[in-house]
Length: 313
Image 1 (cartoon, rainbow, N blue to C red):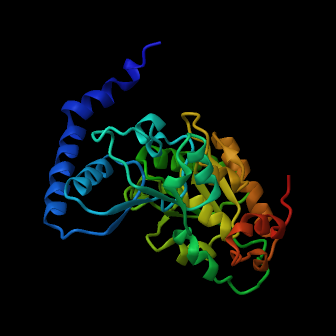
Image 2 (spheres, one colour):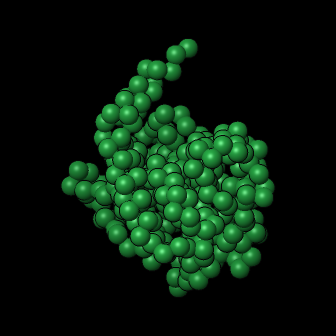
């Protein structure tokens, strides 16, 4: 089977279109910046497998800088091939191979296992602290008070970096509201690169929030996210039930989203039932049901699973 119909648009854009122009700019800009920079003994950059990273690494090597560490600051999706390079390229002695960092700093067992399963060298991996999530250690629970049954449930919508996914997330919710036993209050925390205009979704009466996630998690009862956002992990570790929208392309959900244990929904009926069932569970609990991320990160997920109350089927 030929893959050309699938790859044709990306291939042409990468060689002759806007992506090609963007990559040429990255090459020239990083070349100029690292040429004029005094020699650096060590460098760190955010590792996501983006095109600019290759240009940066190439210029870093060209001008004789020191050790270079790629830092995976968030979760690593095993199906996201941008993170992974063929082991023959990684281990190649060819001086003109695909630019690679000297070391990868990975923030958990799942990420390390994903790389080791692709035959990545263990010596090229450093296990590090998940600094992005350290704020959860200090997240304060709100005052303990029983939630009134007539009080609307507050749903935090976690936006995606991809506009198509965010639109799908909100349109699905619009279609699902009539299937919910009671109307919740909705607010969306968009990805900084994919802002949301609430006027496009009038039936949701959305509040658009740009605060740091850690500043608003305690204000909500349920989180609703796409299947690819790592923000689902923040919500889960803060003690919120998480409802996940399955990708319309059938892609396996982000591992942390699946680990959150919330209902996985792909249509409006399922989304309505999912949020409705979580809302009934929230209405019967007290705020003391929220817990903090333990100081021991290794046992965090196990501790949360034990501490959270049983949900209704």
